Image (cartoon, rainbow, N blue to C red; front, side, top):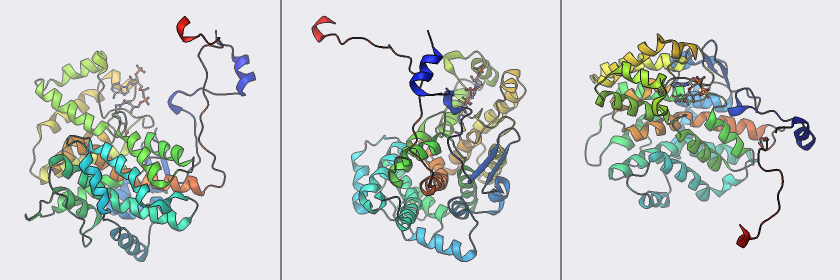
Length: 402
Ligand code: ACO
């Protein structure tokens, strides 16, 4: 009983596009993705070049400001970020209120949202100076917030930021250093993590970025908008996939390492099992990030001397899937999350921190989209339409008569 003419009379023409598969919600000059050919460019620069030659902070500057910084601009940007890495002492109390086994993504989104109570100057998104200040605060404080979430989970004291260190170095130290013990930064880990953050830095209108834009379109402040993005990223079909991949590999291992049996399960859709880390809404030939990360996984694991049985299982899964019609017909290839978990694990991060690392990487992309949206004079509040499928009309029935 679906009468399209009635609907048109009610609402004008409405298109129904499940999951926004074909509907562009925005114009954007930030990131270009060509899913058929596996191309990803930030502001026109190929991801391969940025990952090889760039740094994460330089990439953040590029995404947010539109151009690569000069040496002077980069030094100034780094310096500004460095000035804001500390959290207000009262922010630490939030961690005391969370249960010890709280998921760090929940802590991350809550504490970022809470920052808007400490920086109420952020509440006017139309003041360019305040916009910039909120951006610097977010970039500077998210690693501290993330490291504290980890410290909370292991019951260790917080390690304060050290501002003579670089962005990634500082984060690693705040995460892994233990007071009164020496902590030595491993250059292999620093460089691999910097590269991984670059690869995650933006991906146009993915679920979390669209969320940031949607929340921001109501003119909510930057902290509130980014906090919503963190929540969207958490789900296993989005950023949470890196955690889900590792859990999947561990399960296959504990079940005896039978990759064929697992692939059969996926194909038969037993218990809704998916090959996590495979498939992408946009990439239909390969995910260029996954190719770079696969190489990095080999390098990092061999340089850290951490042979990992799970890497062998992952390689076998990929090999089997890429030669199986089920996956080939559906154009399912490894995505950015398939190999990242193995690298994070080798670096010493627990599985629950994997999606937090994704959030650290994606932050500049979220911020760049927030700025683009708020500065666009034609920007309107995001408000999707719907096709109503409920009861047309009925009379209220008194409580006693139901
Ligand atoms: N394992 C098994 N089958 C899959 C998988 C998978 N990983 N991904 C898609 N399919 C199947 C679907 O069941 C569907 O089959 P059908 O046509 O027979 O019904 C077909 O392939 C098309 O998939 P859709 O679900 O329509 O693809 P969509 O674009 O909606 O979803 C998504 C993309 C969410 C990434 C999906 O591929 C998936 O769930 N992958 C696993 C989770 C994952 O790795 N997410 C990370 C994505 S990347 C990122 O966020 C950074």
